[in-house]
Length: 274
Image (cartoon, rainbow, N blue to C red; front, top):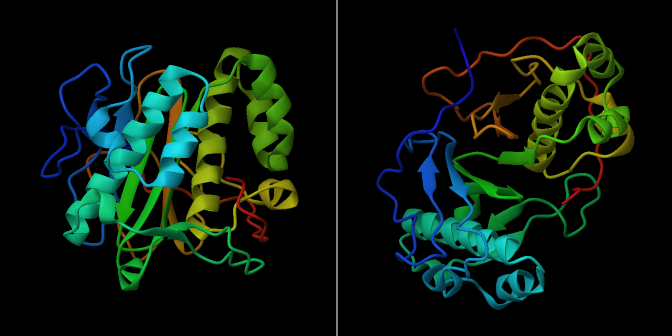
């Protein structure tokens, strides 16, 4: 039976820091391949561990300030682990030291503002795309030869899932209502991460009517979005994750679902929610 992308050991990329308590476990979801979306799962270091010094050293001043502004030690350590690992991955692809990788934001496709997708600065932005998402205890990174977006979220409690589901497509709300109460939070989380990943991949984000107008479904396989491939990513229990990549790229590997045609699809632009 088809299933989501499954993790395997990291290969060929110097994705770890040193050996201290701030080191995170980094697992590649699938081997890197030409024009494929390659994904890595980053687990948080031990609770109260300081950020990994080697990874902290490759961040730029803005990233360091953002890390320092996080109140919880675990959040700071995960931020440093995720962003430092991303820089190492990008540097490996570009042949640059991680600290010398220059990042920028593309113009928003909807309004032209400076809040579109994060990107590598310079000519490499046309051939190397990336996305990063992190939540409590876990981060997900993606590199691809085409626009890509990822999202990872903690599965919410029943009350929060019920409240947040009001923002979904009417068909998705109906699907959730037909599920047993205990299955609704997980199904909601899968649906939500699919939408977030898609919004990040397009660079427009999703909110309001755009969020309600996009149908990706709450079932075991995401619905098909014209021009895009949306897949679930297998992460540890208690989280949900998804990846969206433009159709010219392939998200492949054992157990990748083929998707299904949506009952209804409507796309409207909005600002990036990040």
